[in-house]
Length: 198
Image 1 (tube, rainbow, N blue to C red):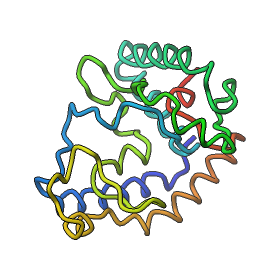
Image 2: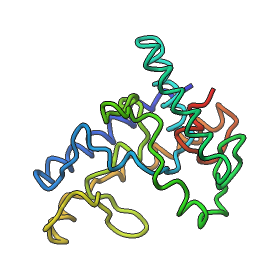
Image 3: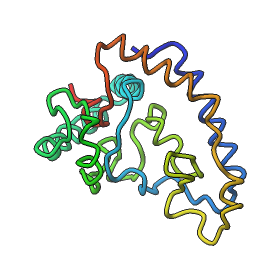
Image 4: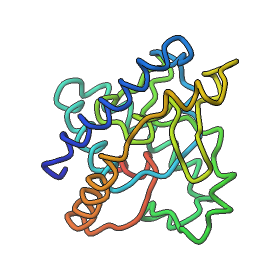
């Protein structure tokens, strides 16, 4: 189950990203069908995992055939990734002590939620935070990062002026992630495929 305040978190994050996208203008090339950020695995929190499961349950009730196709891609992805998984392949929990292994793990693996026929996300409304914030400039421990397809020819100052401000969402996300972990009894980051396996 999703924590009750998750929808509030989503509103804060989506508003911050929309503001950054407005400031980015034509330098931000993200559009439906661009799948640059849908290739390669990335860690998601248990809050993201709960949101994805809820999204798949909603898809089940509106389009069971489409939901079945997502589940099939999930099973196929797990079959490909299990042997080299940098953590516990049974639970799908990533081992934080194996960060170096994760760095080069499954960088060419398509997200199982990506519809290969349309290039669209089948669970877009339920997508993880990483997906929600990808594109506009985002501050990380490594500095200010942007999608490699965007901001060509922009100066450092122009890029910085478009930065997504997630400061107000950070504490709430952390609190809700802890709540999700307590509800499920599962702690630690996982991958989209393991979040949706049933």
